[in-house]
Image 1 (cartoon, one colour):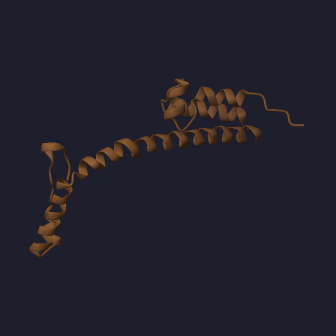
Image 2 (cartoon, helix red, strand yellow; image 1 turned 45 degrees about the horizontal axis):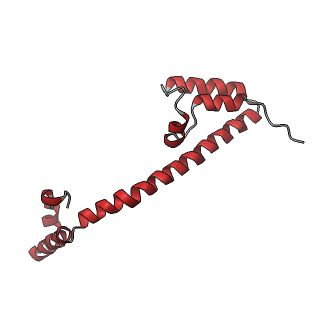
Image 3 (cartoon, one colour; image 1 turned 45 degrees about the vertical axis):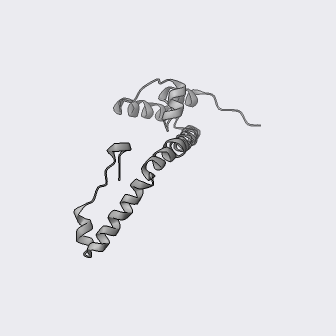
Length: 134
């Protein structure tokens, strides 16, 4: 069933009749779908998704982007530590050009929407001097 208010529709496919040879089984399935309509399940489901699932999805997606971005910086630092900073820089620039990605996005926008840091941030991190350990 889909739709709202006076535009609700119950959709039945021909496979229902093919799979349920007994006419009472077909009527039972239709009765089930009418129950969804009578009990306003479409509206309740819509409200539940809009006000709980979608906000949670945004929070989880944002959290996963933060973790992923951190992992990217860590992996870049690992390659740099192995002595491949120059090659990593040139490789990242080539990939950026080839993929036609945005060079310098707004930091807030990219933090929320992108799983990888912008090239400018990654190059700055690669160029940053290593911390001296005692």
